[in-house]
Length: 484
Image 1: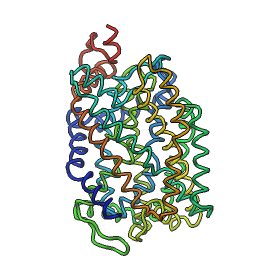
Image 2: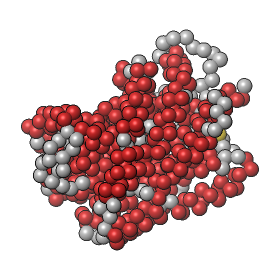
Image 3: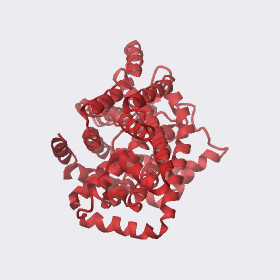
Image 4: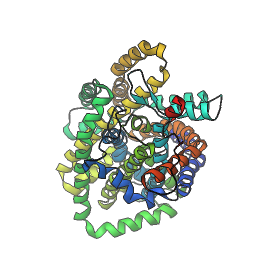
């Protein structure tokens, strides 16, 4: 089965998709004149800097979440088991060089995420209660269908929605959490899964707003907790920091011969694993987190788009790097382990038995915020599907039913894995399959809509950075154009 799944992943995550991910990132980076790099101080000032400012704290009354609640929920959806189990699998299969390609993908992904979040906010729609919702299916309908007169916009929208909903049935969060908790506390994967499912129900019961409120409390704590623990191990082995960098850069372009339990990786495998795991981790180009960002209270799409860049930076440049350095610097990367088990082993070597408890808690919190964050993505797609005024009753009943059904597939996957002894590597192959389809479609669509993004970026620079001339007739939000 492993060989079949590996063949499918190799085909889906072959050079066409890898090239598309990197090309789109390069295209928007150059087209924006390296906005995510040259304006990085401004990006942090306009995002985290606003959290402590009395001015401009709530920029619009229209929205479900504040900008920080939106990005906390989005980071919760992206900073998850991919940062712990996914990075570990990338190194186990692709070697240390995969980390370099994760960094490159993240740097370009900061721009890609800015674009898709910006478009999601610009093209969002307001429901019967006055709350805005948006995402890739919305900018496919309005950007492709209405503005560009593309009659077949429903085809990419349906394919995208199908790709996203495959993750509803093939989900890694419950599996990885149950694996980490059960191996640490010896309580079994199925009981661990049941506890996890119960907590999911408690959180999602209050809907998107409740999820946003909980995310703002959990996300900063769990990121700081995990980073501090990782830094302790890294600086404890400070003499190995430069050799680790050398190993990452060297094997990024040469591959890696077999070492210990490590099977060895050719350069194509190194790149593929680095790019695939980066996209799965930070979701840049996947089209997922723009859905939750679209609900934010903001007076300009680019403002929320910059939160998207910050999201990728925190997820991959900070959190994923901590995991990678801990695994490589402790020497366990070539042990033959993969997934959360490899990261658990690294922390145990670095800190002792308490390291396993730290990682188990981190996996639990990361998984919980990811699962609840992803709940919001599915709900927003359902809201679009049943968006007409005549479908309000059907929409509410569907969301109610979906809310109770949502955690069940994750539980069933754990049960299946336990009884049929499904290896962790196979589970991550499933993850790559579910990522590829919506990512490819979304990247093509945002390329087609690139002109609109660059118009919004020019407008933002004119209004907020005094660069260029303000066009008083320019519509910051698509709904404003419809009203006129």
